[in-house]
Length: 388
Image 1: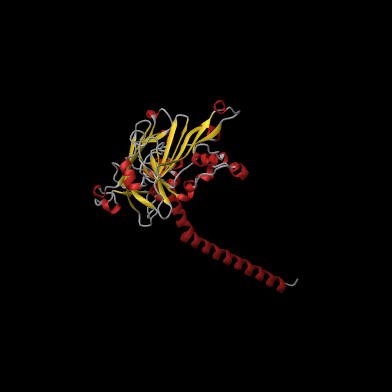
Image 2: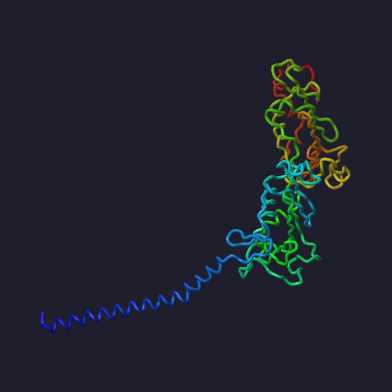
Protein backbone atom coordinates (compact mmCIF):
# COMPACT_ATOMS: atom_id res chain seq x y z
CA UNK A 1 0.00 0.00 0.00
CA UNK A 2 1.42 3.42 -0.93
CA UNK A 3 1.64 6.37 1.43
CA UNK A 4 -1.15 8.13 -0.48
CA UNK A 5 -3.51 5.20 -0.07
CA UNK A 6 -2.74 4.96 3.65
CA UNK A 7 -3.55 8.64 4.20
CA UNK A 8 -6.84 8.33 2.34
CA UNK A 9 -7.82 5.29 4.42
CA UNK A 10 -7.13 7.15 7.69
CA UNK A 11 -9.19 10.09 6.48
CA UNK A 12 -12.11 7.79 5.66
CA UNK A 13 -11.95 6.19 9.12
CA UNK A 14 -11.87 9.59 10.80
CA UNK A 15 -14.92 10.73 8.84
CA UNK A 16 -16.86 7.61 9.90
CA UNK A 17 -15.91 8.12 13.54
CA UNK A 18 -16.98 11.75 13.42
CA UNK A 19 -20.27 10.76 11.77
CA UNK A 20 -20.88 8.12 14.43
CA UNK A 21 -20.15 10.63 17.18
CA UNK A 22 -22.51 13.17 15.61
CA UNK A 23 -25.29 10.58 15.26
CA UNK A 24 -24.88 9.38 18.86
CA UNK A 25 -24.89 12.96 20.11
CA UNK A 26 -28.04 13.70 18.13
CA UNK A 27 -29.81 10.57 19.45
CA UNK A 28 -28.79 11.46 23.01
CA UNK A 29 -30.10 14.99 22.55
CA UNK A 30 -33.42 13.68 21.25
CA UNK A 31 -33.74 11.15 24.10
CA UNK A 32 -32.90 13.85 26.62
CA UNK A 33 -35.65 16.07 25.24
CA UNK A 34 -38.15 13.17 25.31
CA UNK A 35 -37.18 12.35 28.88
CA UNK A 36 -37.44 15.93 30.10
CA UNK A 37 -40.62 16.74 28.16
CA UNK A 38 -42.58 13.48 28.45
CA UNK A 39 -41.20 10.74 30.67
CA UNK A 40 -40.12 12.81 33.65
CA UNK A 41 -43.53 14.52 34.05
CA UNK A 42 -45.22 11.11 33.79
CA UNK A 43 -42.97 9.75 36.50
CA UNK A 44 -43.83 12.70 38.69
CA UNK A 45 -47.55 12.20 37.98
CA UNK A 46 -47.31 8.48 38.73
CA UNK A 47 -45.52 9.23 41.97
CA UNK A 48 -48.14 11.80 42.87
CA UNK A 49 -50.96 9.38 42.00
CA UNK A 50 -49.53 6.58 44.12
CA UNK A 51 -49.00 8.83 47.10
CA UNK A 52 -51.77 8.08 49.64
CA UNK A 53 -54.12 10.99 50.38
CA UNK A 54 -54.21 12.55 53.80
CA UNK A 55 -57.04 11.00 55.80
CA UNK A 56 -59.60 12.78 57.93
CA UNK A 57 -60.47 11.40 61.35
CA UNK A 58 -62.55 8.25 60.95
CA UNK A 59 -61.58 7.60 57.32
CA UNK A 60 -59.74 4.47 56.20
CA UNK A 61 -57.50 3.98 53.16
CA UNK A 62 -59.06 1.54 50.71
CA UNK A 63 -58.09 -0.05 47.39
CA UNK A 64 -56.08 2.02 44.89
CA UNK A 65 -55.58 4.78 47.45
CA UNK A 66 -59.29 5.50 47.51
CA UNK A 67 -60.87 6.58 50.76
CA UNK A 68 -63.46 4.69 52.82
CA UNK A 69 -65.77 6.98 54.77
CA UNK A 70 -65.51 4.57 57.71
CA UNK A 71 -63.99 1.10 58.28
CA UNK A 72 -65.30 -1.66 56.02
CA UNK A 73 -68.10 -3.43 57.90
CA UNK A 74 -69.08 -6.91 56.73
CA UNK A 75 -72.35 -8.76 57.27
CA UNK A 76 -70.98 -10.78 60.19
CA UNK A 77 -70.24 -7.51 62.02
CA UNK A 78 -73.62 -5.86 61.38
CA UNK A 79 -76.39 -5.77 63.97
CA UNK A 80 -78.80 -3.58 61.99
CA UNK A 81 -79.21 -1.30 58.96
CA UNK A 82 -81.86 1.40 59.27
CA UNK A 83 -82.81 3.20 56.04
CA UNK A 84 -84.79 6.40 55.44
CA UNK A 85 -85.51 7.49 51.86
CA UNK A 86 -88.31 9.03 49.82
CA UNK A 87 -89.89 5.58 49.34
CA UNK A 88 -90.25 5.07 53.09
CA UNK A 89 -88.42 3.73 56.12
CA UNK A 90 -87.27 0.22 56.96
CA UNK A 91 -84.81 -1.60 59.16
CA UNK A 92 -83.03 -4.92 58.75
CA UNK A 93 -81.90 -6.34 62.07
CA UNK A 94 -80.19 -9.48 63.27
CA UNK A 95 -82.59 -11.70 65.19
CA UNK A 96 -82.60 -12.39 68.91
CA UNK A 97 -80.21 -9.57 69.76
CA UNK A 98 -77.46 -11.00 67.59
CA UNK A 99 -77.71 -14.59 68.80
CA UNK A 100 -78.29 -15.97 65.29
CA UNK A 101 -77.35 -15.19 61.71
CA UNK A 102 -80.87 -14.47 60.46
CA UNK A 103 -81.89 -10.97 59.50
CA UNK A 104 -85.47 -9.72 59.68
CA UNK A 105 -87.31 -6.65 58.44
CA UNK A 106 -88.68 -4.76 61.41
CA UNK A 107 -92.47 -4.88 61.36
CA UNK A 108 -92.44 -7.44 58.51
CA UNK A 109 -90.64 -10.28 60.24
CA UNK A 110 -92.30 -12.97 58.14
CA UNK A 111 -91.47 -11.36 54.80
CA UNK A 112 -89.49 -13.64 52.43
CA UNK A 113 -86.77 -11.18 51.36
CA UNK A 114 -84.08 -11.80 48.73
CA UNK A 115 -80.76 -12.90 50.24
CA UNK A 116 -78.97 -11.57 47.16
CA UNK A 117 -80.49 -8.11 47.57
CA UNK A 118 -79.69 -8.12 51.28
CA UNK A 119 -76.07 -8.83 50.38
CA UNK A 120 -76.11 -5.85 48.01
CA UNK A 121 -77.54 -3.66 50.78
CA UNK A 122 -74.78 -4.81 53.13
CA UNK A 123 -72.11 -3.89 50.57
CA UNK A 124 -73.65 -0.48 49.80
CA UNK A 125 -73.95 0.45 53.46
CA UNK A 126 -70.79 -1.14 54.84
CA UNK A 127 -68.24 -0.58 52.06
CA UNK A 128 -68.25 3.18 51.49
CA UNK A 129 -65.40 3.47 48.97
CA UNK A 130 -65.50 7.04 47.69
CA UNK A 131 -65.00 7.82 44.01
CA UNK A 132 -62.24 10.36 43.22
CA UNK A 133 -63.43 13.81 42.18
CA UNK A 134 -62.54 15.42 38.86
CA UNK A 135 -59.29 16.83 40.23
CA UNK A 136 -58.34 13.46 41.71
CA UNK A 137 -59.04 14.44 45.32
CA UNK A 138 -60.90 11.87 47.45
CA UNK A 139 -63.49 14.31 48.76
CA UNK A 140 -64.60 17.93 48.81
CA UNK A 141 -63.23 19.41 52.02
CA UNK A 142 -65.06 22.21 53.82
CA UNK A 143 -67.90 22.50 51.29
CA UNK A 144 -69.77 25.77 50.95
CA UNK A 145 -72.47 26.69 53.40
CA UNK A 146 -75.05 26.00 50.71
CA UNK A 147 -75.17 22.20 50.90
CA UNK A 148 -78.37 22.24 48.84
CA UNK A 149 -76.06 22.30 45.80
CA UNK A 150 -75.44 18.65 46.63
CA UNK A 151 -78.93 17.89 47.93
CA UNK A 152 -77.47 17.56 51.41
CA UNK A 153 -78.93 20.59 53.18
CA UNK A 154 -81.28 19.95 56.07
CA UNK A 155 -84.08 21.55 54.05
CA UNK A 156 -83.50 18.97 51.29
CA UNK A 157 -84.46 16.19 53.71
CA UNK A 158 -81.82 13.88 52.20
CA UNK A 159 -82.00 10.12 52.44
CA UNK A 160 -79.87 8.57 55.17
CA UNK A 161 -78.99 5.29 56.77
CA UNK A 162 -77.67 4.21 60.14
CA UNK A 163 -75.45 1.13 60.35
CA UNK A 164 -75.01 -0.38 63.82
CA UNK A 165 -72.24 -2.92 64.41
CA UNK A 166 -72.27 -5.91 66.72
CA UNK A 167 -70.01 -3.98 69.09
CA UNK A 168 -72.45 -1.07 69.24
CA UNK A 169 -70.65 1.39 66.97
CA UNK A 170 -72.87 3.45 64.69
CA UNK A 171 -72.19 5.03 61.29
CA UNK A 172 -74.67 7.48 59.80
CA UNK A 173 -74.45 8.59 56.17
CA UNK A 174 -76.58 11.12 54.28
CA UNK A 175 -77.27 10.62 50.56
CA UNK A 176 -77.92 13.67 48.38
CA UNK A 177 -78.31 14.39 44.68
CA UNK A 178 -76.99 12.32 41.82
CA UNK A 179 -73.80 13.78 40.33
CA UNK A 180 -74.17 15.41 36.86
CA UNK A 181 -72.72 12.40 35.03
CA UNK A 182 -75.16 10.05 36.74
CA UNK A 183 -72.34 7.82 37.95
CA UNK A 184 -72.79 8.36 41.66
CA UNK A 185 -74.35 10.30 44.54
CA UNK A 186 -73.09 13.07 46.80
CA UNK A 187 -72.84 11.81 50.38
CA UNK A 188 -71.82 13.10 53.80
CA UNK A 189 -70.77 11.29 56.94
CA UNK A 190 -72.67 12.58 59.95
CA UNK A 191 -70.56 15.10 61.87
CA UNK A 192 -67.83 15.43 59.21
CA UNK A 193 -67.60 18.56 57.05
CA UNK A 194 -66.77 16.84 53.77
CA UNK A 195 -68.70 15.71 50.68
CA UNK A 196 -67.94 12.35 49.06
CA UNK A 197 -69.22 10.59 45.95
CA UNK A 198 -70.44 6.99 46.26
CA UNK A 199 -71.28 4.92 43.19
CA UNK A 200 -74.67 4.70 41.50
CA UNK A 201 -75.51 1.24 42.91
CA UNK A 202 -77.12 3.11 45.82
CA UNK A 203 -80.19 3.61 43.62
CA UNK A 204 -81.07 -0.09 43.83
CA UNK A 205 -80.22 -0.54 47.51
CA UNK A 206 -80.25 2.34 49.98
CA UNK A 207 -82.53 4.49 47.80
CA UNK A 208 -84.93 1.68 46.82
CA UNK A 209 -88.31 0.69 48.22
CA UNK A 210 -88.01 -2.15 50.72
CA UNK A 211 -90.79 -3.99 48.85
CA UNK A 212 -88.38 -4.44 45.94
CA UNK A 213 -86.29 -6.62 48.28
CA UNK A 214 -89.22 -8.83 49.30
CA UNK A 215 -89.67 -11.95 47.18
CA UNK A 216 -93.29 -12.03 45.91
CA UNK A 217 -93.87 -15.57 47.22
CA UNK A 218 -97.50 -16.60 47.53
CA UNK A 219 -97.65 -20.34 48.13
CA UNK A 220 -96.18 -22.23 51.06
CA UNK A 221 -93.34 -24.40 49.67
CA UNK A 222 -94.26 -28.03 49.03
CA UNK A 223 -91.35 -30.40 48.58
CA UNK A 224 -91.64 -33.65 46.66
CA UNK A 225 -91.60 -35.59 49.91
CA UNK A 226 -94.46 -33.44 51.24
CA UNK A 227 -96.87 -34.02 48.36
CA UNK A 228 -98.93 -36.47 50.41
CA UNK A 229 -98.82 -34.15 53.43
CA UNK A 230 -100.94 -31.58 51.60
CA UNK A 231 -104.45 -31.79 53.00
CA UNK A 232 -107.78 -30.03 52.70
CA UNK A 233 -106.95 -28.55 49.29
CA UNK A 234 -109.79 -26.31 48.15
CA UNK A 235 -110.49 -24.02 45.23
CA UNK A 236 -113.34 -21.52 45.49
CA UNK A 237 -114.37 -19.67 42.34
CA UNK A 238 -116.56 -16.59 42.60
CA UNK A 239 -117.53 -17.53 46.15
CA UNK A 240 -118.59 -21.08 45.22
CA UNK A 241 -116.76 -24.30 46.10
CA UNK A 242 -115.17 -25.60 42.91
CA UNK A 243 -112.80 -28.38 44.04
CA UNK A 244 -111.99 -30.06 47.35
CA UNK A 245 -109.35 -32.75 47.64
CA UNK A 246 -108.28 -34.61 50.75
CA UNK A 247 -105.24 -36.78 51.30
CA UNK A 248 -105.94 -40.18 52.77
CA UNK A 249 -103.34 -42.11 54.71
CA UNK A 250 -102.68 -45.71 53.72
CA UNK A 251 -104.68 -46.76 56.76
CA UNK A 252 -107.63 -44.54 55.82
CA UNK A 253 -107.66 -45.63 52.19
CA UNK A 254 -106.92 -49.29 52.81
CA UNK A 255 -104.14 -49.09 50.25
CA UNK A 256 -100.39 -49.58 50.51
CA UNK A 257 -99.65 -45.88 49.97
CA UNK A 258 -101.42 -42.60 50.75
CA UNK A 259 -103.84 -41.43 48.09
CA UNK A 260 -105.96 -38.46 47.07
CA UNK A 261 -109.74 -38.32 47.21
CA UNK A 262 -112.05 -35.72 45.69
CA UNK A 263 -114.59 -34.68 48.31
CA UNK A 264 -116.15 -32.18 45.93
CA UNK A 265 -117.54 -32.72 43.38
CA UNK A 266 -118.67 -35.78 45.31
CA UNK A 267 -117.90 -39.07 43.61
CA UNK A 268 -115.56 -37.52 41.04
CA UNK A 269 -112.62 -39.70 40.09
CA UNK A 270 -109.62 -37.38 40.43
CA UNK A 271 -106.95 -37.01 37.77
CA UNK A 272 -104.01 -37.43 40.16
CA UNK A 273 -101.50 -36.45 37.49
CA UNK A 274 -103.13 -33.04 36.99
CA UNK A 275 -103.59 -32.59 40.73
CA UNK A 276 -99.95 -33.30 41.60
CA UNK A 277 -98.88 -30.96 38.79
CA UNK A 278 -101.01 -28.25 40.40
CA UNK A 279 -99.38 -28.90 43.78
CA UNK A 280 -95.99 -28.49 42.11
CA UNK A 281 -97.12 -25.09 40.81
CA UNK A 282 -97.97 -23.96 44.33
CA UNK A 283 -94.70 -25.30 45.72
CA UNK A 284 -92.97 -22.24 44.25
CA UNK A 285 -95.91 -20.03 43.29
CA UNK A 286 -94.93 -16.35 43.19
CA UNK A 287 -95.92 -13.08 41.57
CA UNK A 288 -93.82 -10.65 39.57
CA UNK A 289 -93.45 -8.04 42.34
CA UNK A 290 -94.46 -7.40 45.94
CA UNK A 291 -96.79 -4.41 46.24
CA UNK A 292 -97.76 -4.59 49.92
CA UNK A 293 -96.54 -6.46 52.97
CA UNK A 294 -97.70 -6.64 56.58
CA UNK A 295 -96.19 -8.08 59.74
CA UNK A 296 -96.59 -11.40 61.51
CA UNK A 297 -98.71 -9.64 64.10
CA UNK A 298 -100.82 -7.20 62.09
CA UNK A 299 -102.56 -8.56 59.01
CA UNK A 300 -103.09 -6.28 56.04
CA UNK A 301 -106.30 -4.29 56.27
CA UNK A 302 -109.14 -5.99 54.39
CA UNK A 303 -110.70 -2.66 53.37
CA UNK A 304 -107.39 -1.55 51.86
CA UNK A 305 -107.02 -4.87 50.02
CA UNK A 306 -110.44 -4.43 48.45
CA UNK A 307 -110.12 -0.74 47.61
CA UNK A 308 -106.54 -0.72 46.33
CA UNK A 309 -106.08 -4.19 44.87
CA UNK A 310 -109.60 -5.46 44.23
CA UNK A 311 -109.19 -8.41 46.62
CA UNK A 312 -112.41 -9.07 48.52
CA UNK A 313 -111.42 -11.19 51.51
CA UNK A 314 -115.06 -12.11 52.18
CA UNK A 315 -115.79 -13.09 48.58
CA UNK A 316 -112.61 -13.29 46.48
CA UNK A 317 -112.74 -13.83 42.75
CA UNK A 318 -110.64 -16.97 43.21
CA UNK A 319 -109.31 -18.63 46.36
CA UNK A 320 -106.88 -21.48 46.97
CA UNK A 321 -106.55 -23.10 50.38
CA UNK A 322 -104.37 -25.96 51.60
CA UNK A 323 -102.57 -27.22 54.69
CA UNK A 324 -99.11 -28.72 55.05
CA UNK A 325 -98.83 -30.06 58.57
CA UNK A 326 -99.76 -27.19 60.89
CA UNK A 327 -99.21 -24.51 58.23
CA UNK A 328 -102.44 -23.28 56.67
CA UNK A 329 -102.31 -21.22 53.48
CA UNK A 330 -104.92 -19.04 51.82
CA UNK A 331 -104.22 -17.31 48.50
CA UNK A 332 -106.96 -14.89 47.49
CA UNK A 333 -107.08 -13.36 44.02
CA UNK A 334 -108.61 -10.28 42.46
CA UNK A 335 -110.34 -10.51 39.10
CA UNK A 336 -107.93 -10.04 36.16
CA UNK A 337 -108.02 -6.77 34.24
CA UNK A 338 -108.19 -6.52 30.44
CA UNK A 339 -104.44 -7.16 30.22
CA UNK A 340 -104.63 -10.27 32.38
CA UNK A 341 -102.99 -8.59 35.38
CA UNK A 342 -104.29 -9.36 38.84
CA UNK A 343 -103.28 -9.25 42.50
CA UNK A 344 -103.04 -12.07 45.00
CA UNK A 345 -102.90 -11.96 48.78
CA UNK A 346 -101.04 -14.70 50.67
CA UNK A 347 -101.94 -15.21 54.32
CA UNK A 348 -98.85 -17.30 55.04
CA UNK A 349 -96.55 -14.39 54.08
CA UNK A 350 -99.08 -11.59 54.69
CA UNK A 351 -98.24 -9.91 51.41
CA UNK A 352 -99.83 -8.85 48.14
CA UNK A 353 -98.10 -9.62 44.86
CA UNK A 354 -98.88 -8.65 41.31
CA UNK A 355 -99.24 -11.56 38.88
CA UNK A 356 -100.41 -12.21 35.36
CA UNK A 357 -103.05 -14.74 34.43
CA UNK A 358 -100.49 -16.39 32.14
CA UNK A 359 -98.60 -17.65 35.20
CA UNK A 360 -101.83 -18.79 36.84
CA UNK A 361 -103.50 -20.61 33.96
CA UNK A 362 -105.21 -22.99 36.42
CA UNK A 363 -107.64 -20.18 37.26
CA UNK A 364 -109.37 -20.71 33.91
CA UNK A 365 -109.47 -24.51 34.10
CA UNK A 366 -112.91 -26.06 34.19
CA UNK A 367 -113.72 -29.07 36.35
CA UNK A 368 -113.10 -31.52 33.50
CA UNK A 369 -109.37 -30.75 33.83
CA UNK A 370 -109.44 -32.54 37.18
CA UNK A 371 -111.43 -35.58 36.09
CA UNK A 372 -109.54 -38.83 35.55
CA UNK A 373 -109.33 -39.74 31.84
CA UNK A 374 -110.38 -43.27 32.73
CA UNK A 375 -113.92 -41.95 33.21
CA UNK A 376 -114.10 -41.08 29.52
CA UNK A 377 -113.11 -44.60 28.61
CA UNK A 378 -116.40 -46.06 29.80
CA UNK A 379 -118.46 -48.05 27.35
CA UNK A 380 -121.50 -45.93 26.51
CA UNK A 381 -123.66 -49.04 26.96
CA UNK A 382 -122.63 -49.15 30.61
CA UNK A 383 -123.62 -45.52 31.26
CA UNK A 384 -127.13 -45.04 32.56
CA UNK A 385 -127.02 -41.30 33.22
CA UNK A 386 -124.80 -38.26 32.46
CA UNK A 387 -125.14 -35.06 34.49
CA UNK A 388 -123.40 -31.73 33.93
